[in-house]
Image (cartoon, rainbow, N blue to C red; front, side, top):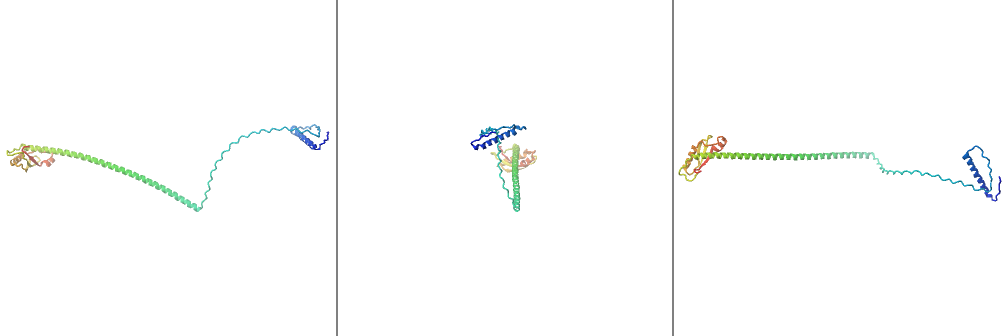
Amino acid sequence: MRFKKTSEPNKLPAGLLAILVHLAFFALLVFGVTWQTKSPAPVSVDIWSSLPAPAKAPAKEPPTESKPPPEPAPKPEPTPKPKAEPVPTPKPDIALKQEKLKREQEKKKLENEKRKEKEEEQKKQKQEDERKKQEKVKEEQAKKLAAQKEAQAKAKTQAQADQAAKSAAEAKVNDYIARIQAKIKSNTIIPPDVVGNPQVVYEITLLPTGEVLDVRLIKGSGFPSYDAAAERAIRKSAPLPIPKDDPALFASKFRVGNYAFRPND
């Protein structure tokens, strides 16, 4: 090896540093790349007082960093429920009193509910009783009205029947009276001294057979001769026509009756 003297003594450490760098580089090549067992061939190295600047190692490109996948959006945290404040544990005496008060309140509430239910039932029952009462009153009024109408109808019918019977009886009585008067008149001889149309009235008592039982003057005509002639005619006309088929009518109207006579009727 040849060494050249330099006029600059400060450059010696730089040369040593360059040698060390080269040695380290060759060592890396031997151990890291080849791993060969052969001893390397001897290398001649020229040491120069002034070494060229070591070549810069090529700059390594930074590896491309892969972008991590986007993180999922964080779930919204649930709203924390307000924590109930712990109820202080009551003391035994207070707890017993509260429990007793609670039972009393529940008992009172139950009693009130039962009372209300009972009152409601009584109210409904009262309304039902009132409704039935009103219905009964209406039914009784309807029955009473119907009975009144029926009674009125019966009374009217009876009155009409009675009136018809009465009219028939009167007509029958008048018919027999007219027959009696006509028969007596046919047997009356009017005296010549009678003037005008005087009236004489006799009460005649008859038997059920129509025979004359008695004749009594009730009112004279003012002409004794005419009165006597009328009495003779009554007795001569027996038996007089009477309703023999109706004894009741005979007894009430013909057994004893007043009869009026006029010479010119």
